[in-house]
Length: 233
Image (cartoon, rainbow, N blue to C red; front, side):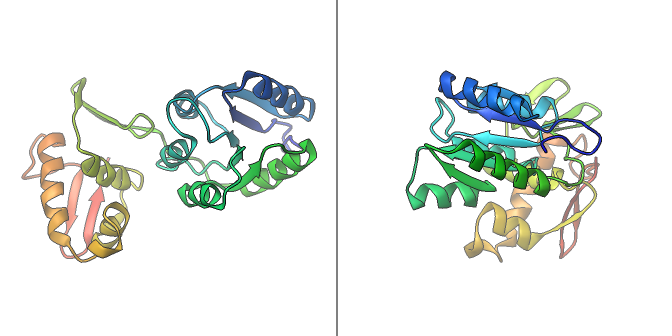
């Protein structure tokens, strides 16, 4: 059944720009006990995911504006919600790219409703997970919005480079935890840079200058000598 033991319906977000398909999916999912929401774009999906709890996302890849694969990557920056791709793209390259970006399943159009429902049930079982990380982190006058990729300080937006943002987001998603130098280098730059620790010293210094009141005595971005870095809210 779509509803959980406490009778709360499973909430499914359908991200589909073809209105007829979106409406048909919404009607059929509601008939089978799901709470079904629809949005026509990736931007709208990210905004909604940041505002409310979702149990499953059903996502088309060929969206206007932001491509579906980028939506997956952006969602995975702060949430582990199960993502089922529903796409007319049949090529193995498309499937591999979507799955590598963080999708949990891939269904090609045209599809049978019973198959989709079975995939949703499987995703709901996998989705019995710990509470989601917050999409926004507020620390006094400093705010980090993981969903919008935006940092504000004293109410003003702080301009970060893509690399600065990637490092900050990785640390913010794991508050209080030590993130090793190797892990940051591998995730931000790739395996070829796993030993280039001087990169981190430069970028962490830049982040502290932009985000800390006293960069020489940081409150949020701490160095664990010889090991890595820690973000303290």
